[in-house]
Image (cartoon, rainbow, N blue to C red):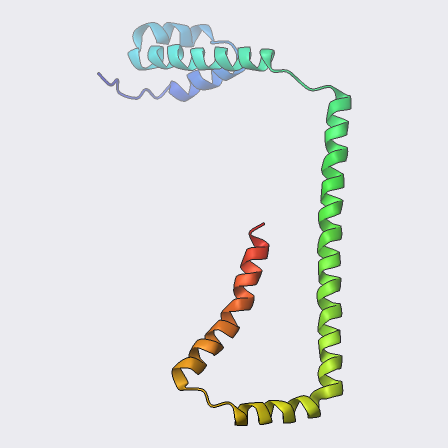
Length: 146
């Protein structure tokens, strides 16, 4: 059977959190089934918590210092990898722009001649364009999946 809530439950919880119950509240526990049940359950949980904190092993300062050093090293490596990746992407972009600028006239006339010589049906052209758009996205997703 569920006991109705008591207005003194919060006061009881605060007392249990401090580690002692005042005599006035002890007398109330005798007459209030809701508070006595709360005292039983919350007291057991707080006892378990105190016991767990007492049994918890704290690593030594040396172990914590080594973990911190390893973590900092991994973070610095990640920052370096990102910086290198950005630098490589910028270098590749600049190289492509320079190549495009140097050979733009020749490339444009070659593309026009190639497109004029090739007769492709519309469905085949759509498949080719779709593949050309999705291939880089698939490559990016495969690289990011690592």
